[in-house]
Length: 546
Image (cartoon, rainbow, N blue to C red; front, side, top):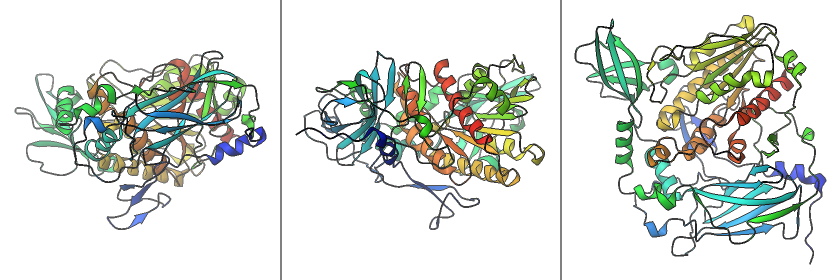
């Protein structure tokens, strides 16, 4: 019997009906009273993860049993089947693969929780898209992809982490204290210097420690350093990450289960015996201009977009591609504030690649400093400023007083310039090494600062830049900067933590995952330009309606 295909005119509705049911995060005022993120403000930031059949965040119960190497999901024995369409595939079709996980002995797994990547790629034309992996929590998974271009395409499935590793990340590693440790440098008038160990602590004991609290920005989390022998706590000047101590701490946390983070259990391509390569015939894809406008708190569709000939076509919402003259008109007289990590620093660096304005007058930092910097486009009366957040993780030594917290920057914005501000916050790349409790509280305090700013400036545009995957060759890097933690914990906390604030969450995971380049923390220029196009498309489309 011939297969029946959906009308191409209904594909858009189908796509938006396949929205991701991601981890729902709820903030609590205290241990017993739940409150929605849509409350005016919060004083305590405690989150509770809820089960979802559409993602890998399904393991709630702590598993203290050491798993057997034979029982872990096998990337070579797992079965993958194309389940729809069952006839020929055309542009506009929804493609689905079913995954039955098996262990190394070929036995079906009956629990979920694996963390996977799925992509569809083509060399001619140069195109790719990321798939949504739904976890049914019984050993089976379903991948949803969009046939967005005509030609031959190849389905790729990566087992990033088996469920045993995911369980360890969630229940052992992320809650663990002092996973990140720094070398703290003390110097008195350039004449005497000492180095001690620094880390984050939320409760005592405090004996023998110098304390550097920032309660307004970090809550009860405090940066502390061991007291130097011959200098004062006031002589603390700079710091950098002590990787040896970080690795020692990780070794303690993963003792006995190291193998689930090594070899065949990390970033392994799943063997696909049939329908790995598929032919996509010409068809119909509804115009992207028919998508609804981008709005805060909108649903994230299962298929977020696709790359075609070097350009990202977003299906998140309608993101106009404004020409140069309209961008200039939109941004004239504005003050763009970029705050976060080095990935938002790439936006700052490449801003003019999209803006295409006269060369701006720019400030810069001397080596060893990460003070706020800015570019001034005189012809547009436009200022673009970049702030790096404190408590960064990295080998370079930086002055501790150079960097500003999000809360400080937001609270200093005055009502006199409400119509000029455009804010982007990107607090993700360095925070997989924080405890869950500390990061959640930090996010809650940023949220409250956003609400205070919103009260002063009701129409201000605020964007929360989401994380993207970043692959590392070493086990220690996988554990410190886990993609699972970045996506499922950090990303979901940011997305749900700013609901009800009027901030727009910009998801960039699928765009970066689908790009043919390897996923590094600093993605190629071509990706940054497309990220900026999405950001400016959202901003200018919304400013046009104000």
